[in-house]
Each structure stands twice: as structure tokens, then as C-alpha cells.
Image 1 (cartoon, rainbow, N blue to C red):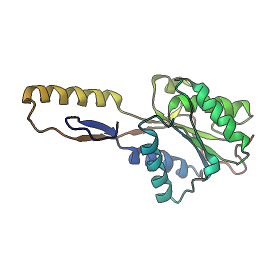
Image 2: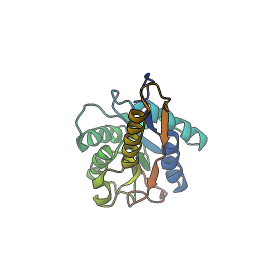
Image 3: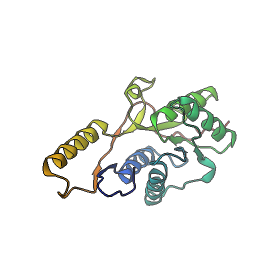
Image 4: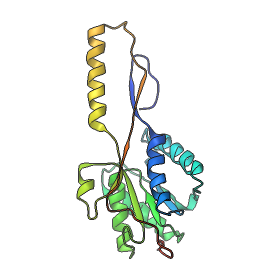
Length: 200
């Protein structure tokens, strides 16, 4: 979570860096019309990550078109959610050449929706996910994504817990520890081509 609670150490991802890595990658490939899949309203990361994306886009001179933003609904851990919102996005008939998804699961669903609509990934539309789940590398093509260092987070959490047990209840402790993401470039991103843009 992102709240501050007495006695609790938050281990948080650097969402500003995550957004910058993804958008710098897409902008460097010539993408200017970028669509976004936001997370569900109940996710503690949704608004934090979205604000980071808006800041990064502004810094890079990229516009964020409200017509190219959709939000996941429901609590299924399934690509179906990303599939459905991408169908909605395509139905708006606003062209885009890249899509940045809230997580890898929704990115996988988005790729299916794009392909069913006749768009090639990455030739027509580049797609970036978030998390680097185990199956991301085994998609066809492999999914470009922002990796959360979950193993490192677990190691830090265990280390803090053991140190606090050893030091006692009154000992000082860190309120927040920030970990850095990493961009993993695979096969779902490519240079934007003139005339290539997705609509329904």
C-alpha cells in the first residue's frame, strides 16, 4: 500500500521511474499517440501509477488523450479484462500506435483484441506491460514490460522484519523503502511506422 501506518515499513516501487522508462522507450521509437489501460479503482497502485504516467508524459512532451484511456473493471486475474477494455478502446475509432497496460495480464488480453481487429503487434501497435510475470517472456512475441523486482522486495521485507525482531519494539525503523523497476525490452515494441495506427 501507499498509506502511512505507525509501526509499518512500506516497500514501494518507484512508479515515476517506471512510467518514465516505459514512455521514454515508446517515445524513442517514435510513438506519439499512446493508449493507456488504467488499473481497477480498488487497486492501491492505480492512482499512484497513473499520476506518475501523466507526469512522465508531460515531461516528455507527450499528450494524454482521454479518449485513449480505458480502465479495467472487475477482479478477475484474467486477460479477459484487458481484452474487453481494448475492444472498447478500438470502438472509439481514435488512432494510436502504442499501448501501455496496467499489468502484463491486461496487456496479453489487449494483444488478442488488437490481433482480432486485424492489427499486428508490434508492426502496427506496440504494447508494453507491467510486472514481468513468468509467462511474459513466453508470449509470442515476448512481452516488453516494466519489471517489478518482487524477489528483491521479499528479501528486503524479510530482512527488515528480522532486524526489527532482534532490535525490539522501541527501535527505530524505516518508514519507506523505494525499489527501482527495470524495463525489459522484448518483441512487442517496435518503431512506429507512418500510417500504422489502430482503430476498429
